[in-house]
Length: 523
Image (cartoon, rainbow, N blue to C red):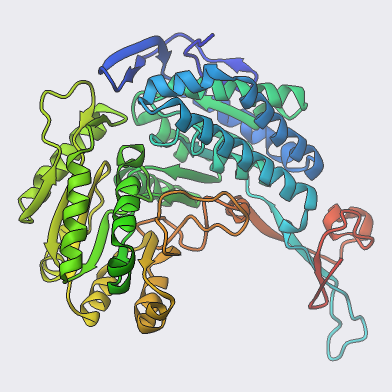
């Protein structure tokens, strides 16, 4: 039963203030029930609870936090078809998409639980004292990662499960020992409430401090901005537009106590198809590119938005094949009316900048539906038109023909920071285009060979990040076990007696973790 009320620790929010509803993107119609925007008093209550939970939750044993994360995953799975159907209703994406996304969400939670059980993520380091060292004695110095404090997490429009209430930011923050306050997305509040109930139940059942988790509903920007400004908040996780991410970064930097904001904002994920790939696998690559561009109605942050091809007859065949596939692709609804308007405005602007354009031309589309499209231009025009670097969120991409090796290098140098870059070719191409790879390595968080950028594997070695404006901090990742370090900070203990040290730094190593002791890693 959806109530439309925020979750403030162990209590529910009030039925006061502004109300709003989700929309069915298929029809554009509002969907029951009403949701109540949180008040500033409720935000402050959630923040005070999180602040009170900061020390006790941060000191919960890693093994108990691991059980807590697994309980959240179990509770999400127990929601069954109710969760899948609500997510589909609020997004118009198929049920099968959310079966997979639910699996990914629970996999993330359990991955962090396994990380906590193993324990070495805290990067414990011990340098023993040398009392007789001359000219000065050396003290006993030990350090490790400790929780940063309460974290504000903003749900993503395009991933109602994997990047939202119990998604990667929340999972990694809770794993680090940080209380979390989630700002639900206006596009899928019912999905958010269902998952929020699952998290809140795990808090109770696992006897975690009350302020470990809260969920706030809001139909505007006031609550989100006030949340980032609140002195109890020590870090922010955000997935969304560059404009939204940049606004939060500026708010956080202007605080009396500036805090880190880990944003994932904007990426066009350039794809370079080298001559040998066009000749040997052109049709297969065109089919894979079509699936990558139109999958999820083009609303993945890793969608390939720029595709570079050699000037050749085989490339013309590739382009013709790809254009036909786009023309034959039926229109589909985007997530919100605002996203639809942005897509239509951006594609109209791009049509004024480049000569080549192909799309499904259906008219009188229902709800938030749009036609998929593809644009074409030359490398020279691309280099001379900076706007072509901008992301268009939705089922469209830009094909760029290039005739020279050096031209590709100039293009790579001109690119902004990206989440990914893909290269299609042969192993010998990697040698011939080693200079291109070297440049791309400085521009992206993930390099892909003979594959497509959509589809982010949840595993310890994954890097889902990149230089600005792809993210606000290229040293971090939003996916993979390293994501936990975003919400932790180093603390050093000097000359402490063994009994007063955290378990991870004690002489006997009761956690049985890998530690660096006097410059050597050992258990």
